[in-house]
Length: 246
Image 1 (cartoon, rainbow, N blue to C red):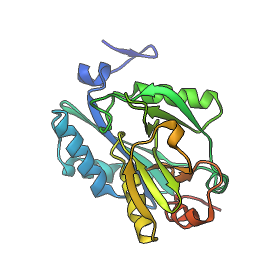
Image 2: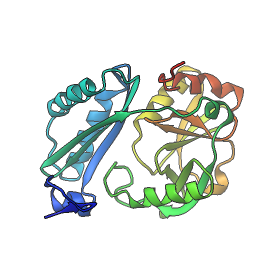
Image 3: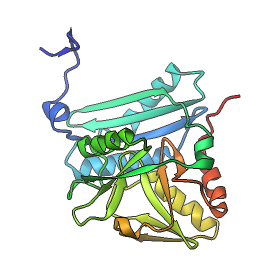
Image 4: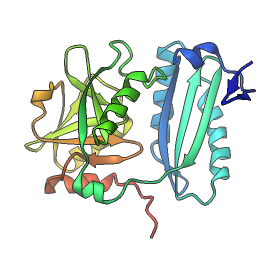
């Protein structure tokens, strides 16, 4: 028997899913019923599940769940969706999505470099083994920052607690290697090339982050750290969430 806040919990989930983070998940945004990069999100979910030995239930199962979730929120301008795969279980969730204030895309946010490290074997996978990321985010919030940055075992800045960091410097957009295989980040890289920017992948230690940091993620689009330079404004605008209502 399980009690959740004193109430019996009827939902039976595998023990590894509950206690060991043995799951993979993906989050994506829906804008007016339009799913952003659904095919890419499901492909990554399937790829990560198979890499960790989890049985993937098939895209069709999640597409059926998706129809039911969209019907449940017929008037929501935007939704945040999450699909999770564990051994013998799948979860599909949706909730209304409220975008960040537009002012943050003009003024930027603050980040906090934390001492938390990503898992040396699992960093590229979006797993339920999420504790270091949660702790990094809590540390950042206590310092009044929007995002906490995590390191790898060699001291490189490789990931954010909920976004993928990028660095812009002298006409080049750098994708920080060593962290999660971020879908929004890859879409940003494609768009940057289309705007004539050079795109490279590299490892950076904290002292090497000279330039302008950006944060990419399904929830935020492309968010600048501090006021962005003019040449980045078209790229930021291209990924601005279209969820604002007058």
